[in-house]
Length: 130
Image 1: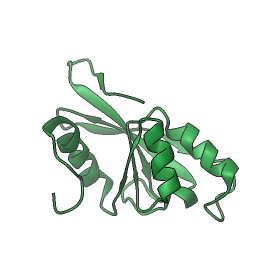
Image 2: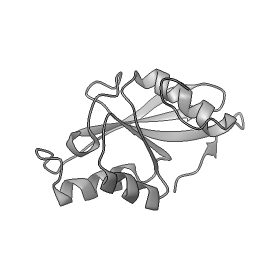
Image 3: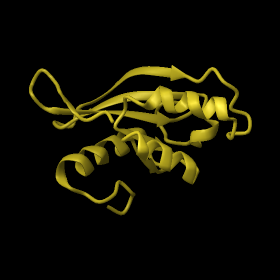
């Protein structure tokens, strides 16, 4: 599991993988995404895109074992994964690796802000209503 680390100002920072077609909106299914946008969300509210990780295996069906295994590897250093949808198998496997999955369809910036609230302020969810 990738826990928070501290930035140069001593603030907690969480690495977050996002299933997105454009890096702005969370709009892709975990199984069908072709890339993950990796962000760092800091306790002080700062959020930045640090890299994009491309999936090399086929993602046509979303259930290809090699592609799913590669996706787990691509996000295993993240504390959170944000996807529009994901199956129960994916949720369980990520959780076994210490990665929390949230299924949301909101702008990335809004979700990252909610991650900070969730992580540092004890919120129960990052859903729209919270």
